[in-house]
Image 1 (tube, rainbow, N blue to C red):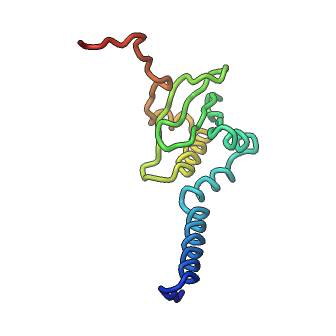
Image 2 (tube, rainbow, N blue to C red):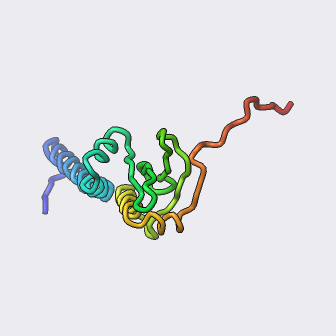
Image 3 (tube, one colour):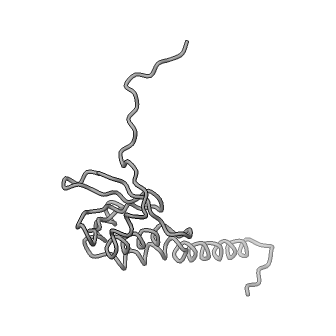
Length: 141
């Protein structure tokens, strides 16, 4: 494929250039990048703008019309939001196999838009708000 001589400054520069080109290619065509690109292709223009700005997008459920916010990630990243846009209930549902975050988010989007009731029947509920910490922490002496 490529023949490099191990001596001289020019061969080191060529090797560095090839490694740089390879890492750029992998970065632009890796699984996460391809999954994110596919997700963006499936988003509506409003969802795409929201995703580019906030790293999440809103989806309307197919049966109830509830609004869900799908955050970037693979687990516990779907939150039902109320009319004020505040998190109400968290939902955790993921594909059986490990996938890139963009692929998981696309599967979640399609599932909520086509079979909301079926998805919520399988999903695990969680509290989207972090647990509150006690106001004062006692020190043991």
